[in-house]
Every structure is written in C-alpha cells, then in structure tokens.
Image 1 (cartoon, rainbow, N blue to C red):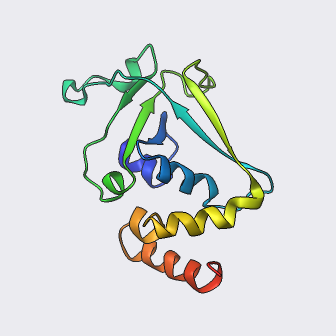
Image 2 (cartoon, rainbow, N blue to C red):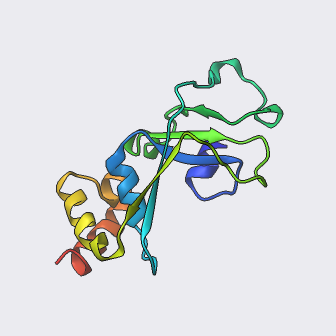
Image 3 (cartoon, one colour):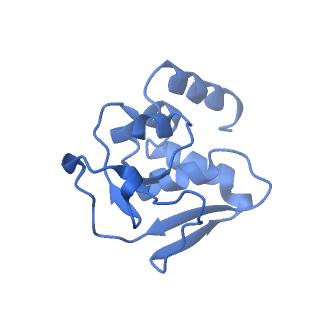
Length: 141
C-alpha cells in the first residue's frame, strides 16, 4: 500500500513527513488560488509493522514508518497514518494547522531550494531531476 500511495494510488493511507521543510515544500509545490496549509499531527505511538497486522481490521487511526523500498520514502522523511474508514474525515485535537500565505509561495520555494528541498532531492530519479531543471529554467528568478 505504501508504494502505491507514493505514486498516487488511492489508499486508506495518508502521507506525512517528519521534516517540517518537506511539509512546507509540499504545501507550496503546486499552484493553488488561495493560501496553502501545513498540518502537524502529534502522536507518539507507532504501529509495529513487523507484526504484519491486517490494515483493514484497524479500529483506530495508526501511524507507521514504511520500509524504505523506494528512494522517495527516506528522501521525504515519509510516514503514514492508516485509517480504519477512508470515508470518514480525519479529525483530531492533536492536529495543528499552519497557513502559508499565497503571496509568499514563490519566495518560500526559493528558500527551500537553498536548503536542498526541491524536486530532484524529494523525487530521486530522472523524473524528479527533469521537473527540478524545468523549475530552475522557468520559476526561480
């Protein structure tokens, strides 16, 4: 499921990152007409994925770090929450919302670039490198 989620397959997993700079990048990566958001979720408990529990039998939201079988997972400091019912919105008192103002989006991407947070780093491979070069060519200045 984790690999499918990383490549856009709809699953009952929700992508998160342990790196706040990566979270900021994903909030401003695509163009949106309004402000962008970063959600911070505090939950110290992890699912032990070595137990091979059936994800479809979960009763509560759980958090786990996937096995690094794809270079995107460690590059993005990825982790997931798995949800018992994907049709029910995820709400928790442990979630904070940070607003990234639309007018600072381009500047934030430039700052993140200086810290090494960009397509080529987060999406290792030819596709990430190509998108990064295109961004350098068209958007950085």
